[in-house]
Length: 289
Image (cartoon, rainbow, N blue to C red):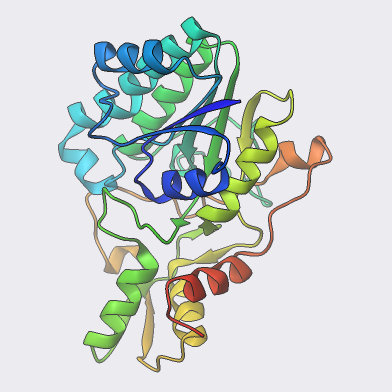
């Protein structure tokens, strides 16, 4: 099986390349393919003729999306369209990576988290652009898997953000006398190596459609920071604050927990708890023995 990973040097892309190592893997970085340029995408697809395409490329700086709306929609919507069009042309199975931030603006929040069958109402330009990308994938490619995940952390770090939340918390905890962290935004942190492994499992099936894939359990950003510092035994005081006390350009969902309902319905195993993924991540990064 010839697998093409777009965004291979990113946080999830790096772990996907680890999982698919040994197979017929084509890994393309942002320098090697520009998804906003149809000619660039077509050239790569004609050259490699992939059977599976995994598109991890995205404009993920949530606050910057508010002021750089054209870029957000060019990458997250039209870029997704270009990849979907070329996947359809070569008959490839397309795996498109999406986000929990397509939710959050609904009047009622499901008590157990959003399922794949709930109607999304995004709060931010980032969420709107990612939802637009999903809709274009559904319209333009017959064999698609849309994978929504949440709060990603992986050893490579996010290229667009210069790292990830966990590394930022560790650095700041070593520099500052105390940290103030938002405690009223709830989600499911997800280790990208776990996510990459689950994506590989689903690709090997004949299942298509939309899947929520996150590590089990939920927490706030404060909880994630608290668990991180506890595991690596940093004693810097953490102070929980509200979102109003930490204003940002883009409004975040107060609850964007994704219920992995499709996995349940299809009898597939759920992901392990986020705390276990975090411990393995911290060990992989050398923060623990």
